[in-house]
Image 1 (cartoon, helix red, strand yellow):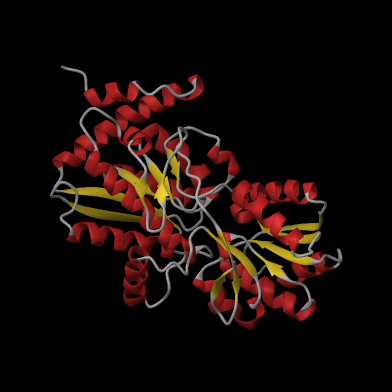
Image 2 (cartoon, one colour):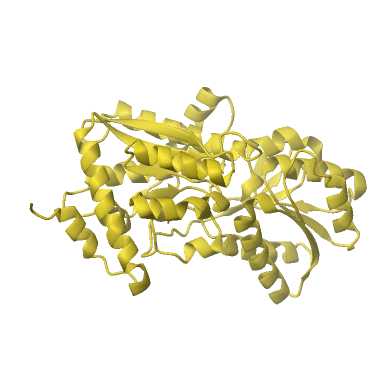
Length: 385
């Protein structure tokens, strides 16, 4: 039997020696999956996201963005004349469920997976995806250590360390040199990575963390105790590393205990759910987005108008990043030749056009995107100049 030319093309990649064997397996196995898709009536694409749990706003936004990208491409004729089928699995922000969900997607014969959406779930499923030779495009995963690996996970967001450094400089510019931090351990891969980068840059800028309080995100968590521990350190500002539900509750407690302290949270919580649940308590809160919600270019306006009509809310960063991930994958499958792997195509044939900016992958499968600071004003995220 003749050798599969796509597996041979995968061998042409020359990553660092420690990663070479893993990527050869990935290239060969991905070629097998693509061959199975060629025999199918449709292109099967997996989605692994927290569709339930306290991180559901992230996963549901990601799902919605993926659905619009799928429907757009199918209306345009699909990929090489075949429709795209989106197969979804809920990881519920639980390691075991994420691993089981990925195994189901592998069994379904998906060509690639959009997701996971949190760093902790990504760390849990990367070994399984690597073993199966399945490529994953993670729209919102940011843990810095995952950016240092060369494997089956391609990252479409900026790293936690990069965002944290920008945040530290901005808070110092605003006069907050003593910052107290609450961080959620349910996604510790992200929160601890982000906190480390923030602490380093804050110290370099002449500031310090007055108190760092870790907690587990549960319905019974005492957020009053968390805020009390932060306020007792006499900070000049409060920073919450958590999802939207927790940040809303933390902000409400802070408004009662220390209404004079300014609040901040990174991009994880900057969804519509934060505005809905936080109400007046999050007014003036500083956050960040990996896209510009005030973009007026035609491409983005069509997307946001369609999203509002379909889902009756504004798109959030998970929806934008998920739509970009799907678009990148669909375009790569359209260009894919029989002599190269999907990963090779994604890394070498870019840039790929996203909703707002071109997307380029480096040799490790990372992207370096812009970010915008936003502030909550009258229950809207307003982009800062």
